[in-house]
Image 1 (cartoon, rainbow, N blue to C red):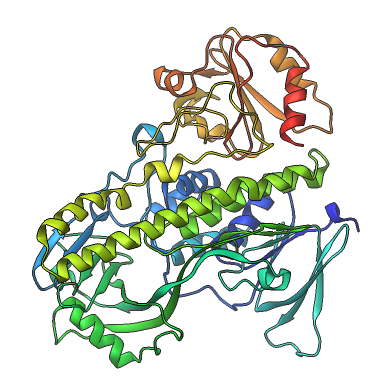
Image 2: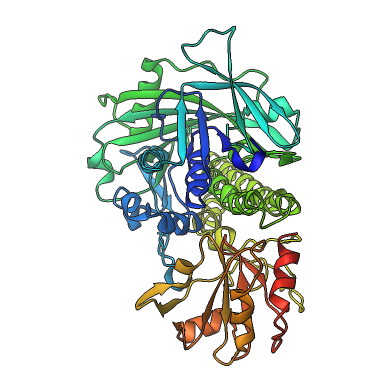
Length: 539
């Protein structure tokens, strides 16, 4: 079989790999999802879904399920104290977790294991996804039209292996990516910033937490024994993390008794006995792969980038990686776009990953400076840093304000304003198309509800009918374009007008991943212009 008739192979069934498989299915593309683990992980790891990712989960029908398990809005803050039972030293302001006028979604403080279960349950209902757990990649081979994954099952004969052929391969197999190693792709950045030991435990600490909900308590900084108490479900599931400086060897694994002692110290009650569920040691790094594509293989998620967890962008960035990639793969496989479109994946996503890595490192540095200020009794510095930490908790611009620049984006004719700390939702080329409430299809919906899986053209109330005619008569070798005319197909209000800047004769073209692809010159309406623009965008 030729490449486009084969499934796409996805290596790694964490949140990124499962999101890739789900997206492929939503585009009608079969996939084989290969995962070394026999079952879902039990360690919660990440504990937050950012606003942009929640917008995607809303499109995929997962948002309500995850929000039902999330921490309440008032918990979205940090509290610094000697221990939970000891003196409280300060707290950050509560985050406004709603998207407000900027999004139909809300930030969701839910643990990664809940995200994995939601995605896994959905994939079980997808006939286009073949999930193979307990299967480990040992080698891969690329030809002109295929990529072959050489795999072993957990109970298989090590001297034998199976070969699974695919049209493309998405590597979402984590920081220690086997695929990246096999392809010898180097990473840039800081490969070792330190270590964290993470203790996942159960316990009733409501007498210290019930009246002060919090995403994470930072304890012991004044005494030089830093440890966190991070909420997983706000009731009985918790994570305590202990930082360690960089060293040639990782810290010795914690034994259960040692872990219990650390948790007792953070709680501040010598009689407290936590139920230790799992203990893990994490290597902190801030790296970005130098190449994100090798012929038919693409890196995504932690295989392409690693961030410190100070900021909560690791899982979120990875899910948005595959959201950028999959529609491009689907179009190229169908013959409606050229291979050059796939080159824009790394061009667009690598700068976003680098920005999130830098931002996460800055957050970690801020926490270290807070620890030093508390250890030395510099209360003035601590107060200033606590206010400054609002940028860590409130990350709207970091989350929604990134901008793509590649051949899959036709640039604006006017210069792009420089980015600031304040989020600007304007619908400019390369930016996420903004949310606005509109009336369409007989009900009130978000503009984002129209922006999945196909190109969308919004046209002004007095725009030429030539645009709709051009969309309806595109050659079969071109992507399909849905057209929504203001005043006819969609009813809009002032909020739409403000963020889209769509005059009566203007149009704006939006890509299947919800990013603005093109704003033709005002008043232009040649019937051939849409096809020319699409051919440019799809290489």
